[in-house]
Structures are given as C-alpha cells and as structure tokens.
Image 1 (tube, protein in one colour):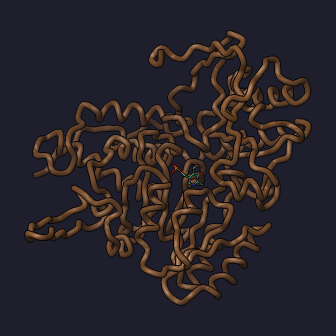
Image 2: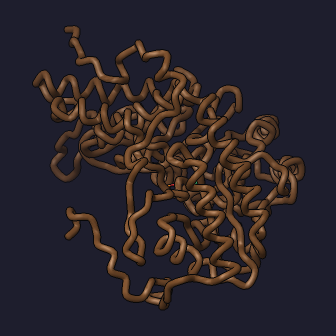
Image 3: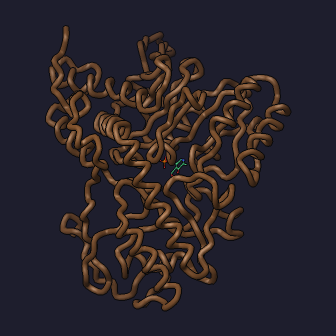
Length: 449
Ligand code: PLP
C-alpha cells in the first residue's frame, strides 16, 4: 500500500528563492527580558553553544505534524502510519545533512552524550580507544577499561596529528577507535579532523566525530572527512525537542547487545519456562528500545534540512559576528581569550576568556541582571581544558549563532567594558555558590507564576 503523506516543510521540495537566501529565523528573536532596574530589553542570547533557540521552520513543521501524531511503528491507523513515515524519513534527512554513506546506521538518541555512551557500549572487546584530554566530558568519559589512552592536547594541530600517530604505533593490536571533537566547546577551535582521520585510518583505526559543536556552525561531510561515526544533539542544532543521533558503520552496532532492553529492540521473545528466549532486532531498532521521540526526531530532521539549505548565509553571518566580537573583546581591559592552538586558528562562533582580577560568575550575573545578556561562566563540562588554559576552574564564554545580532555583540562588549572599568550598578550576593542580584524583583513569565 502506498500512503499519501501530508506535505510538510520536509516533504515540500519547492522553497521560495528569497527564503533560500535569507538567514533562517529563530523563535524568540525579539524576546524581551526584565532587568533588575525595572526596564525590559531584547534578550541577547550569547549562549548558543549550550543550547540554541528553535528555528521558526522547525517550530512550524512540528506544529503541522502534531495533529497527525499517533503511535509509531506498529499502529494500524492511518495517523500511525503517517507518524511512522515521519520518524523513518528523518533518517534520510540526517544522513543527507552529514553526507553519510547509504549503509550507515542512523540511530536516534537523546543527545550527544547518549549517542557516545551507546557507541562506547557497542565497541568490540578490547578496543583501544584514543582521545584528547581537552574534550567535552561527553566524549572524555564514556570509555572505560585498560585500553583507553588519553592524549595530552599539544600546542598545534600538526603536533596533535604527530601525537596520534605515535600513540597508534604503540597501541595494542586489535580494534582501535579515535574519538575526536569537531570544534571545541571551550575555545570554538576547529580540530584537524580529516588529518587525524587519515593517520587513524593508516593504522587501521576507526574514527568517531563529536560534531555537537561543529554541526550547528559548519557543514560536516563524513565521507570527505572519512570518519566512521558521527554524533550530535538536536538542542544545539536549533531543534530543542530532545533528540540526538549516532550515525555510522552498522557492524559493531549490530554485533552489540542492545543499549537499552525492552520493546522495540526485540524481534521475538519466547517463553522457555525457566527462561525467556530473546531475538534482538537489527540496527537501528536494536538500540532504540521504548517508544521513540518522534517529535524530537522530526524537529532534528527539519533543522538538518533547513541548515543544509542555508550554509553560505549561516557561515558568513557567524564569521562577521565572531570577528566583531573578538575585536570588541580585545578592547576590554584584562580580557584574555583562551585558545588551544593559538589566536589565529580557525574557530566557530565560540569564545571563552578570563578577565584579569574579575570573578567571571559575578560578571555573568551582572550581564544578565543589568543588561539582559545571557552568557555562560564555569568550566563548560570540559574541566581539563579549562584548567589547562586558565590555571583555574572558571572562564566566561560567549557563543554565537543564528539568533545573534550585531547589537547583541556590541551591547555585550560595551557592558563588559563598563563592568570591568566602572563596576556594577547593582549589588549582588553569593547564593549556593552563584552570584545573584539583591532585591531581584524581576517577574517570571505568566506561565510560571
Ligand atoms: N560534545 C561537545 C563538543 C559539546 O559541546 C557538548 C555539549 O555542550 C556535548 C558533547 C554534549 O552534548 P549534550 O549535552 O547535548 O549531550
């Protein structure tokens, strides 16, 4: 039977030429937030690296599909069949977005952390895992056992390639996996993925790419990079509906025990009296037990489709804003930008820095309370990297994306300069280890009251 699927933005092939050229818009672009002084200003979200706002097109298409939402996979009803098609079709969008091989499995997960843990559980016994120690904890921590080799991140990309080559020469015979981050969530620096993959390949190793921070900013072509596995999160890719993905070679995933056990991961369960016989499903269902997050997966697929059509504008938008941000920061007394590979190395729109003599937690609280600016302070789930780069455990991070404007960047730089040179205009106290404004009467939105 052929199902005539309703036409949604993902299935609609014709996109107006003007829409193709425009920068994709995000939900909440004109959100106004209260300041402690009682004024309201447009929110300057400079925390895209943590979670990006939702694309308008993602919101619209989710809205369009919701009336059709029904049970997925085994439902006999027409809406169930539509829902199933929406879910399965999403694998094609993700595969196309990443330039993945047609044979690659596309396994939907909750996020990057979940995807990397799934991969870690699916490795053949005694796989030697090699990674660099400045990675995000999601990439650093899931691998266990004696065969994990953490490499100290050297000062240049070329040295990183040499370091990997040396480590692989010494690695035990058997399956090997290099885990590499596409772009650092601390410094935004782009890692030499293709060069590292070339060396890994020469030593017969597979390569897993943590694209959580790279994929929202730059096109990722897994075949050109020659990586075997790629992971990313929908909430960083303008699709904050709780889905992530692992894309890659299916053999290890197929040979592994299911990541979660339960319905969906089973082809057949038989009663043998004292025990149950279980035949597990093939990938991807093998690792997608339980009712899947259809809406999240659909949102992720639509974000892939939209970004995939707008790379030129997206990259140019971020390049210009990043240059503006860095030039502005260079004028603020005491600012020291963090870099693994040096100030001139290629980076996406993420900048972390310290400010001499200043508590970055205090600064971020004041930026929010007095200027309506959202940044991040701390160690960004990359404690080793932040400690290595600062000698301490805190930095301030400003990260850009499709929701960022020139005004946001300029306001941030001016506010930071004023805080550093003149101090804050409000009083703050430490509450549970975090700075908070005194007498904060900012009202929460009505749905929270
Ligand atoms: N990898 C990198 C480079 C990240 O920046 C992040 C999140 O900040 C993660 C992995 C983990 O992503 P998630 O929290 O969505 O699992």
